[in-house]
Length: 396
Image (cartoon, rainbow, N blue to C red; front, side, top):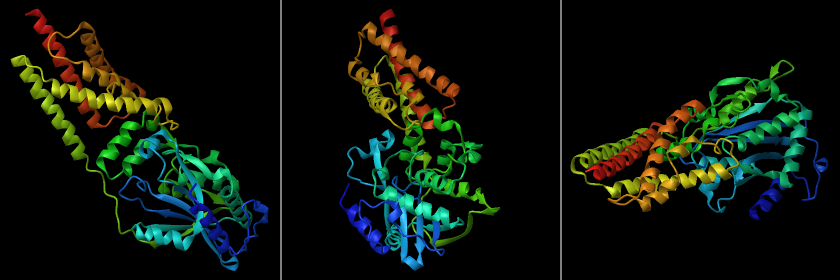
């Protein structure tokens, strides 16, 4: 990883005023004082994808030891190749980082993000256990993990460490909510309407299964909701919270009228061309080839993720029934007049696959964006029109 991590690590331990070597074990760390404070820090989302779901981290303060640091599981290198593709593949390497809180908060203020702090009401043994475990992870290979939305990220990593070191029973929080991963994303969606649409196309039927409170802690709000339900000695572990800074940059709801308008226009064009084709017997291959090329290219992208993604919400997806990878090949083989029988058969199978798409998705419980239905119907109408033209031409 970049050598800046070594500098951060040195700075981290310098702040703690403890000379710890890279080979040090957690037992060489100091005992935190009774005055040590532990808190969950949550950061508001940003308009872009990188911070679109917000951020969670753990702050540790000990005035007697001159410690004020924050542990953050959301660090990653932007130099990783094919970054956007690897996000859906679940192979973006993220890692735990430790840095002075002052540096952390300055960066988030600069980004215009709101930051809230929730103090943890945990005992001294739990604090020491968390302190030692986080430092052990920081100087070991365990600090690296593959980022997976929404099952393995800054919030879920922090959740798991808290439950393990504080010895909380996660099974108590496995009661199903009346929400799914997709429902939660819809409540706080990505601002860019095209990214929002892409995200909802890429996640399959497993994203529409009901999840529990523990699973819902994959974003800052879900993590705080989970911790609010935990009690020790008849006292809640979250007792005091305050706002460190207010956001100056706000994420807006996606403008779905843009995406729906574009796909509605495509459907309208398909209907007009099909009518003209029926009346004049003229074929509009430029439009049909464009539809097949776009859907086939996306289908290849989708199929590669279904076969290789480490994200369970991605590796099954009924959108593959309209975004057939074979459409890419068909885009180059489709010709005017004298259509070979095998191409007619291929077009017929493509139409049947599109018919099977909404039925299969409904049976599996996968929610489909309206834009996808509009595009699938557009392809279906044009393929059906081409088949009709060739069959009527043959009978003349």
